[in-house]
Length: 413
Length: 75
Image 1: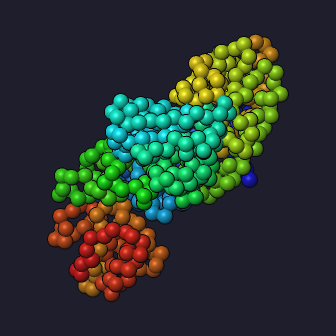
Image 2: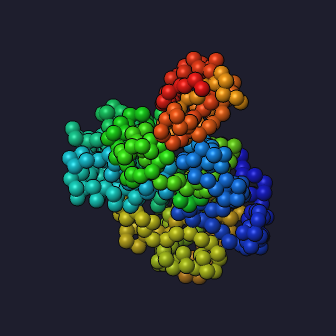
Image 3: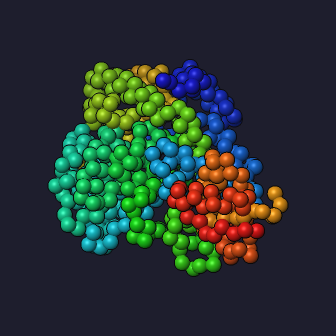
């Protein structure tokens, strides 16, 4: 299973992925984009077309008026909800609420749910999008336990269970590390949460669209996702799945305001999705996300995963062959996402990143990746790592070329 | 569609109306999204208009799918 031919052709000698002016500008460029964990790129051309169509032909507010353009906008937003529901095994699409990104969704889940005196358990691999809201809540009386992970970034579910107390309300867990890609034992932790009648929040920023997710099988009550990474949508889209075990009266919205419903009332609606969607949604962004998700449903997440596992294996094997390169994480493509962290002995990550970009047009992210706890866990704090993160539209030829570039940098160091 | 023999079902919010419309379509019930008639509700949002002969089926479908709805009104 591979991406469509025109995408696979996009490689070194010149990108044939030539749709519209933007793509024309890139033809002939040897640019390699390995920063998909920060933002997925490029997007399928259908996504751009759907967004242009929304701006040119729809444009109206998706949740307000009843005229045909407003209804069309609302249908597009619904399509995004429905597609994501299919992707995550959610029975009722209205249980998916939209916002700006995974960070907003995680803030809604954490700040909306946790009250002073509540206890929450999380891992040492979390992104700042979980840790910073938790530290702020801690200063207001929420009690936070952090379970330490292995140097590969893995988690023993029993360590989570050992932290459970009578006041524990929530377990919050990253699905896969944004630093080393290590997949967390989500289903096992979900079962533990159910057994102890706790709520379970999963941060799927790195996995939604790239790795199969089923909220029922994972016993997931809250799933935070972002639209602009593996879901192939644009930046400024994301959201939260809110499962039936969540009492909406106990999940306070981050924002209150106009929803286009119950306009005669000055109280925030209590029903989904309006309770958590005040103000006009990012209609154009959701048009792109709906199309990205439709594309993914067509290809199948299993096929995306198979492609990414193959590329990750190729990348890991290539890195092992370069003397002086230290790879972090599981070093097992099956146990991680297509995100790989490494360092070059005797070089700062920032220097490696700069030379990759300036001399070879390989784009990646270096440093701490908004996850100081994860770097402490794997032993790379404070310098951080060089992170290569691949996506569904990455190619084997790009992996080979990036490895050649790195080998040259290492040899000349 | 004329008003004769028609009914509308009101929804608290637009996205519910669209979810119900999809369900009706899958079940072969013709329905049209319309702005909520003012004389039926002061709420903004959308309603679905369908043949009143289908009222009982519509009620059963909405309840089976747990879609919250307001009233079903004959026009």
